Image (cartoon, rainbow, N blue to C red; front, side, top):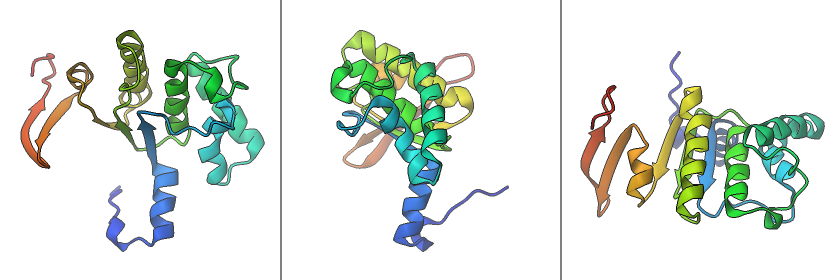
Length: 169
């Protein structure tokens, strides 16, 4: 079925609903609510979409466990390492089962070892489940893990590289 949506024809409320129900976001700084626990941050998008708190927390807990954060559900964001907080952000982006996930410098605030770990988790949680992942990054190591790389200069595409099925560019 055609899933094309003309966002220009949507009202502000319609655009907000589209973002809440179909799009996931992973930001460099996470954009998590510091007053909430890991599970509350992860469950928030579900509750905004009308899911009961009980069901949202249960599903969010499953996502946190899949991110290797089992037992840390009740920790506030300030009690987590940078990599752990970024995994909460990934869980939050996935909890609504989005069609597309947008990640803006998802490893920019992490050390190189944690960045590799977070990228593996992000790729597994999105493309590993047949979802589209769009990453904005200055990190060539992050870009090389993707299937397609668009290089921009002054807002224009200057190259478009696609990885072949044999792994070559």
